[in-house]
Image (cartoon, rainbow, N blue to C red; front, side, top):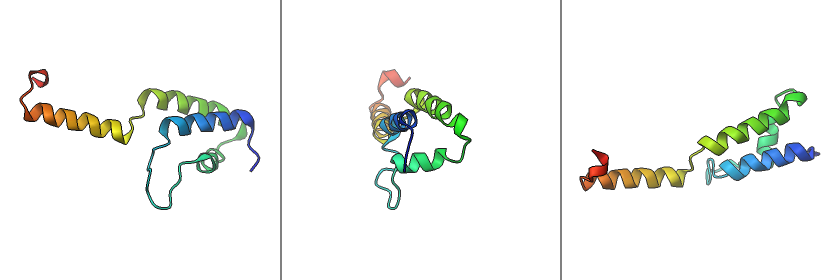
Length: 87
């Protein structure tokens, strides 16, 4: 698979941000080949801008499973202990 260097960089940025997506799920690999296969459905002239915008949004909004678990664990513990910060 011959991938333009700019496309490859944008794909790798997305993988850096959201690489844990569906981690450990049998038969699923969130890798360069997967993202490239997805981006190929779009016209060539919009692929790089789309990847860049996706990376921009993910950088600001993607929450890892570990971060969410930690948040929920802390929230649960605060509620359980009647922490005044939750009031």
